[in-house]
Image: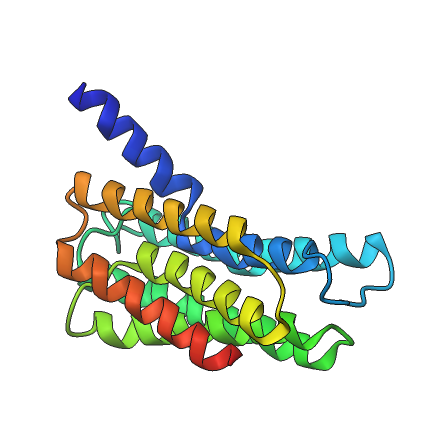
Length: 204
């Protein structure tokens, strides 16, 4: 049973890895009914998905693999805050790069806000990590929850089922990080509050 819980926790941590959450957020925004987002073609949507996935997930993952090869980090889990400094700095640069490019493109403001929020969260995690190891997983899922709460409030649309699902996922992610001893409760709770607060303030 213990091994089953560990396998489940590892799977949840991988599926809802913080680097994947900007892509999940983009998918949610582009598929919400009743908010009138204008995207010219399905090809444009696929292009946005591909760019976001590549810049916010594939390139940071590639940089982490290079750092692992150079023995700067001992594993992709980066268990200590010292190991996380350079990967977080690289991620912050990449996230800002996508936000910069999005500002030049004719895409809905919500998408630009999503990427700005994600960039601010990565920078926040980078700075906090200099002194204290915070849960990036919880910052990410908290940011997604905050974004959807703000969208539901500002646009007056019913997102109850999506929000319930996101908060259940947040609970699973928190359980997983604690079960794997990747973080203590304070790092998990503060991470979630940081994520939800930054995106709420930004979107509202």
